[in-house]
Structure formats: structure tokens, C-alpha cells
Amino acid sequence: MKNIHTLENPDFGYHEATLTSSNSGQYYADKLSAERLRRCYDVAPPRVRKYLRAEIEFVVERAESGDSVLELGCGYGRALRPMLGKVRSLTGIDTSIDNLRMARKFTSGRRVCHLAAMNAGRLAFADESFDMVFCIQNGIAVFGVDRQTVFAEAVRVTKPAGTVMFSSYSERFWRDRLAWFRIQAQHGLLGEIDEDATGAGVIVCRDGFRAETVGRDEFVRLAAGAGQGAAITEVDDSSLFCVMTVS
Image (cartoon, rainbow, N blue to C red; front, side):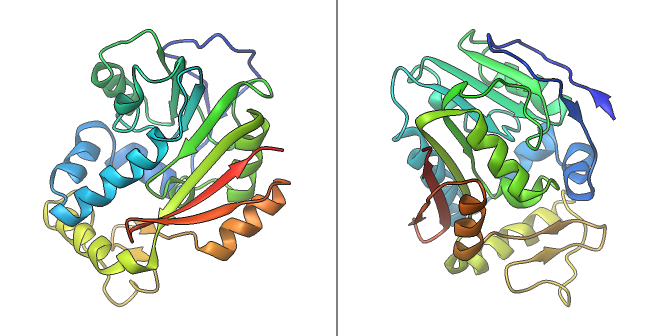
């Protein structure tokens, strides 16, 4: 395990935190971070680009100017940059140092944006630190961390009446999603897709990559396990959002 490495320290109380490895999470850290991760989005076809924009717009529209916002699994800052200038403070965490270095450049080093290497299952923030916590682009299914723990941690660091949002893929988006992943494999960003093992919302590559999804029922169960109710919303016929108002 590695000790937490903070690139820019947000002004919050900290718990002790460590970075731990997992199969899917380590795949992203080793093979799909920084420039390679950005290339995945660069090769996305028009329908996928529309899905990606719709997810970010859904989150940004729900942020208020005085909010303190945390993104779980921020990658190279793709969703952070549109939030700059709208909220009071913005924090992004990721387990990849390369991602965070790129995110610092991608967000132009703005002081309102803080970046830290951190595991979403063990957040190094005090209770009730944020007005909004979000995790999009199916991050909850690819972190390789117990999903219930991630939900509980997101709720813990959110203020009462604050908002927690997680998204996964809609079942309606399966063909477009699979086509996108095939393009990524063709560009050498992923291993060859194992067509026999791929299906029912799960994409499997021969190099060990595996991408699952979280459905409506599981989102409701995860929210209930964190002591919260959930509104499940389908966006753009491509994303499934679980939105919790923290009680």
C-alpha cells in the first residue's frame, strides 16, 4: 500500500487514508490513465460524446454557486473543468498520480480546484465536508472497491441536505457502449474483447479488463444500505443516475 499523496491540500479535516490496489482499479492506474485515458474519449463516436456531455451537464446543473463539491474518480479532470467558476470550491480524487498531474494542468492550476490521491472507499475528509459528491461514467462499478463502502463514505462526507450522485450505464445504451469499447480495443487502449464472455452489461477483455454496470435495483439497495432514499433517473437514454439527498 502507498501513503496518501496530496497534490494540493483542501482546507478540510483529514482522516488517515491509504491507497490500495484492486484488479479493475489497478488496470486503470496502470493502463488507462492520463493521456491513454483521454484518448479513450478522443476516439468516442458522436453518440458516445453526446452521452458524455449529458452526464456532465446533469451534474453541473445541480450545483450551486456556494457549494463545495467532491468528485470521486476524477481522472484527468474531464468533469472538473466544466464545474470551475460555478462553485465555491472543487475537489477531485483519483488513485492515479498520472491522472492527477494531468488534471492539474487540465484545470489550469486554479486555486478553487484541489486534487488528491485517495481511495474512494476510504476518504480522508472529515464528516459533512461537502455540499455535493458525485461519481460519474460508471466509476462505482470500476473502482474495484466494495460499492456499499463507497456509498457510505460518500454520504459520510456530505452535509445534511447535500447531494450525492452516482451514475452507471443505461441498458438502452448497451450497443453504443460496446461499439465504443471495441473502438478502444482497436486502438490498443484495451485488450481484445472476449466476445464469448461479454454480454448482459458486462464487457470482458482478454488482458483481464472487466467492466460491469450497476442497475436500478442495486442503486436502490446501495442507497438504503447507506441509510438514504434514492431517486433513480435515466438521462439521455444512456446514463442511469442514483441521486440521494442526504438526511
